Image 1 (spheres, rainbow, N blue to C red):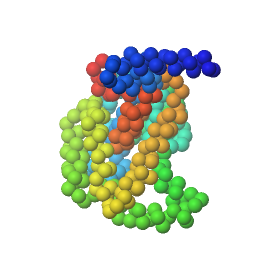
Image 2: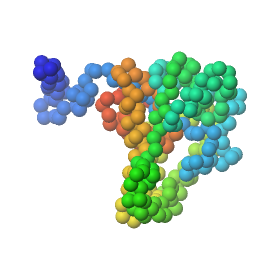
Image 3: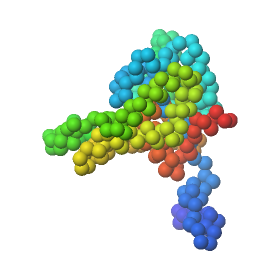
Image 4: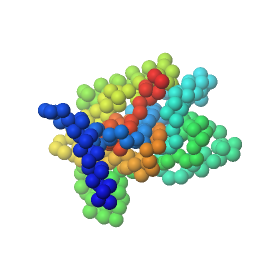
Amino acid sequence: MRSTRALLSATLFLAASLASPQGTLPDPDAILVGTAPRPQVLLLGTFHFGYPDLDAHVTAEDDRVDVLSPQRQQELTELLDVVMRFKPNKLCVETQGGWLMHEYQEYRKAERKLGRNEFYQIGFRMMDRAKLDTMYAVDARPLVLDLYNGADSLRYKPWLDSLYDGWSFGGEDLLSQRYDAWYDATDKAKKHNTLLDIFLAMNDDHALDRDYGAYLNGYFKLPGHRGADVHAIHWYSRNLRIYRNIQDITTGPEDRILVVFGAGHMGIVKHLFECDPGYQLVRLKELVEQ
């Protein structure tokens, strides 16, 4: 054990020395990553094909994309052709429990048709294309629900009720209104773009970062720290737990993990993968350029 540690320390020292010309600090990845292979991750942020109207922004009926139309089905094939260049060997989806795998088995036995939801249109098709045997349900409930419904809920409920009094996603401030205008303009633009172009735009780094900015305005700016505290135990907590679930299904550097989630999650999840030296993040646009 000591000899292994000594060898590792010597290797890291050499890497740091090579990466640190006199007068500069070492490149962190020279030490934290080096040349070691890492599991790769492709984040595929999506809009909800079935339009369940559960999010703060609701798309107008006239602006909804009909993924079951012949044209959109052809476009979906083109999108998945690009995603397959990633050669995924693990698939993570936005749900909890094992119900989706049960439905997939029924679909494989020709007992269920492909529904409209992205679970089916992307998830089931990627299972078939990549010859996978498991869809990992990595969604999570936020900490606030554990506090509100847990064994000590009577202790936390008054505090939580005071935090959430007057709070919701979105807001009435000028910047939140601009976000609403951006979302509306994006919905209208989807009608005139292919699914591949839509997904490229939705998964652009700058668009994901700006989309996350919506959670830092509006009711986030309630007096004092109320909005920040709600965000910490609600939306941020949920996405941290999602990330932790993905870590749990990671088994080695040979993993090529496709994560299919609502694009609203990806601003946080992308940042977590960017910061974690244990993973290599792959962008959809990189696959188009291959």
